[in-house]
Image (tube, rainbow, N blue to C red; front, side):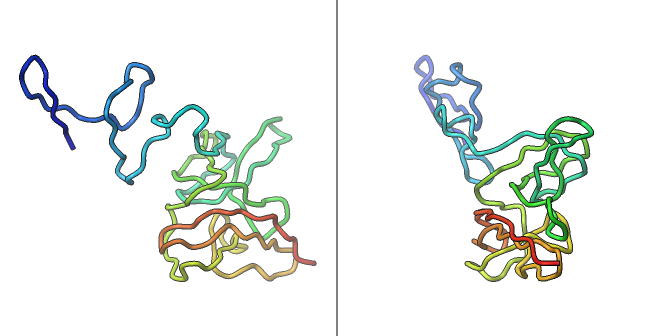
Length: 172
């Protein structure tokens, strides 16, 4: 989308900005991105997504739910796929892109995960999967020693509104 403005008495076409580089972009018109949203760089100070940037200890797929943990080996925070099949790998957030092992991942701690698919029960809950690490499922885990953790509610076939709940460890 382009706009028109008057430059030296002539009408000229120009493009609005999608991201801000700071004060150099003051008073410029803005445009939403391909998803219909404003980039966080266009928001006022203090209005940012709740996110953490942490190195991965394994590859993450787009839309995966992740666990943030302290790596004694590296003496640093790391992230990995959340996994309800065992205690200690609870979900803390999700990623909207795929990352290779060792790469810094941007983990969103709240918001809409629009990198999922196949959900049909709008309004229904989703839980962390005990069979496929990093994935949300419409069936809560029920096996001995597994973890039941609500991740949020289905908004659309491709969206989960995340309200990650406290995990509950099932008896062994």
